[in-house]
Image (cartoon, rainbow, N blue to C red; front, side):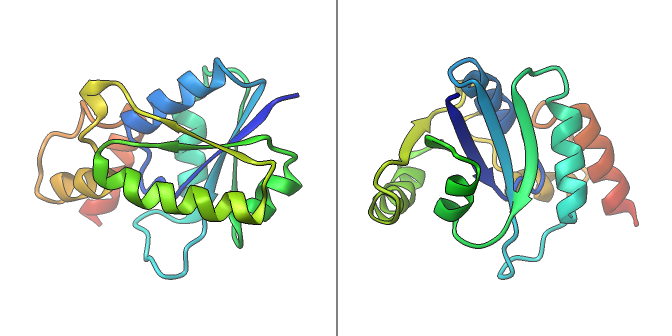
Length: 159
């Protein structure tokens, strides 16, 4: 079985993330969407909420499992018996960081491949950070995130 890991903070998941997940699911037998615990960031949504939001957003996509992890990504990938890591690239600035990470991951786990995927053009400028900011300022985020995420964001920000 060919298994890929698509890691990220997904705070929240965007339509760009969903696009990458759907496309990766067509290439691999299984895709594990891995919500990263990052103690250096204070997320808007809890780890469990992010897992739930992703599961709802990709419910119709076959061959996808959502979980969370902490620690080294390459160790998580080994434990999952993954053959590849998938990283979304929106711009050249993303590539520089991701390229360094891919080289480090290759050094730590030489058999684990990194695959860079660009989202469709209409999603290439969307980031979770921008979506949160637009929502905070009462902007319309309906074209940037799945409906369940839009509703959850609005609910969270009204508290």
